[in-house]
Length: 236
Image 1 (cartoon, rainbow, N blue to C red):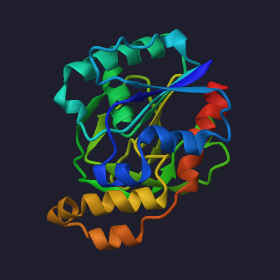
Image 2 (cartoon, rainbow, N blue to C red):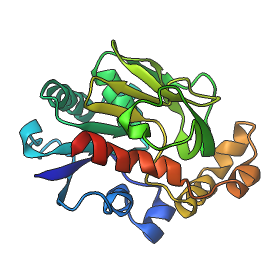
Image 3 (cartoon, rainbow, N blue to C red):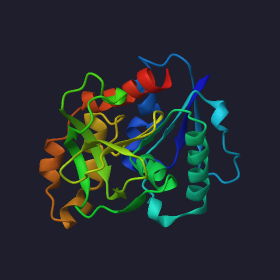
C-alpha cells in the first residue's frame, strides 16, 4: 500500500523555486519511517477523479495559501473525501490548511485567527501526552508555523492534543485514525526563514517584528517527529 499526499496548494514561490514543494519536504522528513510507495494527488484539479479511501494505507493533506473560508468547489469536494476517509477509518493527517479542512469537513469551524497571524518557530504545549503522535516528545516543544486562519471550533468529539499562545487548537485528534496539526512538521529552519522573508511586509503591517521572527526561525525536530509518529503509530 502507499501513502497519498493530497496537495491543496503550492509553497510560496521564492521558497518553492529554491527548495521544491510540500510533497518533497514531507517525504524528506518521513522517509526514515516509511519505505512504501508515495503518491501525490492535486485535489484542486476538479477534472481529476479523487482517490478512494481504499487506495492508500494513509493520507496526508498539505498546507495552502488558500482559505477554507472561501468554500471553493474543490474544497467542498475535498471535504467529502475527508469524510469518506474518516468513515473508513483510514489514517489521515491534516497539516496547516489540511488541519483546517479536516476540522471543517467534520463539523468544526474555521475563521481568521482572533489572536492574529502565527508565523515562525513557536512553542507548542502538549495537552494529551498519551496520544501516539506525541510519543517520546517533551511537554513543550517547538514547531514551525505560518497561518492566518485557525480552527476556532473543534469538530464534535475532537480531542485537543496541543496549544500555543495564539491557538488553543494547535493539534487535535478525532477518533483513532484522524489527526490535525496547525504547524508544518515538514518545514526546516531554512524553509521557515524563507516564509518569513516572503511575508515580511504583511508581518510588519500587522504590528509584528519580521526581523525578530526571522532570527528565531530554526529547525524544529520535535515538530517533525509528529509526522514520523503519525506514520509509525497510526499508519503502520
